[in-house]
Image (tube, rainbow, N blue to C red; front, side, top):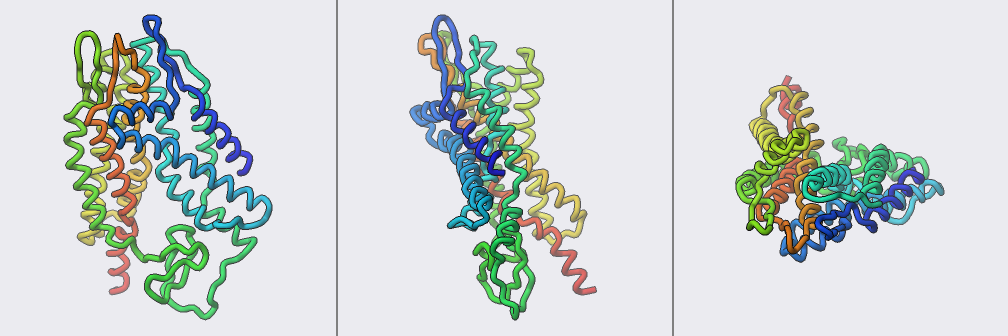
Length: 364
């Protein structure tokens, strides 16, 4: 684990420091790093989108890799490093929001898209991000809960042998505790113990309603503006899909359509179905609804693909006398939709699906 994580950290630094690609058109060139692309968005008064890309593509992957390396180095020396539990909980949170693989697909889509506009020259950052995606996939094999189990072999958690109460699993480390008082914390990692996520239904509905309201401007308003000698033209998500389709790239058109149109709508419908049936105490197909929730959790991050494509396109097309592309308000609304739906899926407690069956069994 130390070798894989250390390799990922080194490749991550290379990916952030070197340019990804360079465009050459009419004797002019434009290249950019990921941090440079974020800076361009910030200067273009799109600070919210810049912050999204920074957190999802720079900060959270760094926190995940750095924290895992810190913890694994301690375990390799057969000791629990200071702040062990807090760091592993940080890994769990950062892993949920780190989107290196989505960024890599966004880079490839942008590169293919730019080939019709200018000559594309690959740089070391492109290959570094490709290697980072593979290494991050290997790092995902190391679950924080498994690391807690390894640490327990060195220093078992203290349990009260006389404790009596309701068995409850810690949502962070997975340890089963005996909760005998409200607001009790896990005896291993110190996380708060809850039989169910507090106010899960209320928060999920609130996030879903907000996401549904923002989904309309996200698809109606332009996500990019192209300024050229012929004037200024706005492109929505659907017009971008149509452009790829008509220009002979049906594969990219399908990818953008699925990630930016089909996935957000499917998430809204699926989460509304799950939340409504849980709230009404439905006993309909609990196993199927649980699998549906897992699918929603898995596909949620891929909607950020369009935001990454917009970010890189805006940063690369900076030919002042020929063409300049800037981000539009639709990109901001769409980014907020993605975040709200991810928060909604995180707030929904899938254990609520099974509660009506448990109550029926108790009555029987």
